[in-house]
Length: 80
Image (cartoon, rainbow, N blue to C red; front, side, top):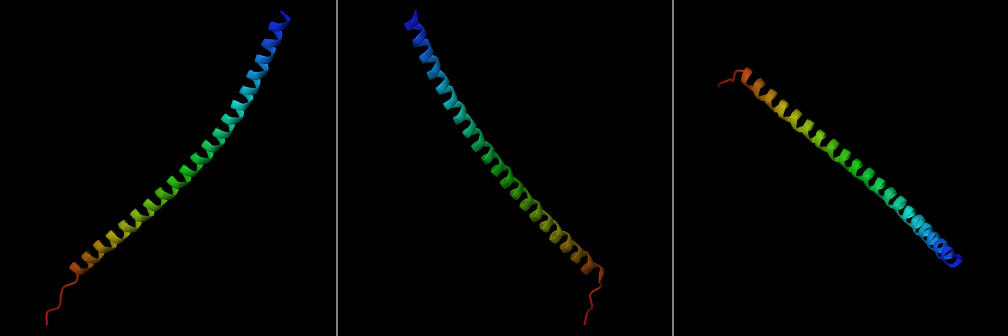
């Protein structure tokens, strides 16, 4: 009985050590995951901001080009 109790105690200690090792590994992986997620969100935000700026620039140049065409049509052309 004493031998069996000692074996179970040693097995239990081994399981607790393994559990602690796995808990630390899971904590490390979670930190890495959070850092990668934060980096991904930042890159996505930068890309979205860049796309919005490009679209706004394209829209403003298109609308100013359209305004110039309308202005040119409104002015009668002089014939020499």
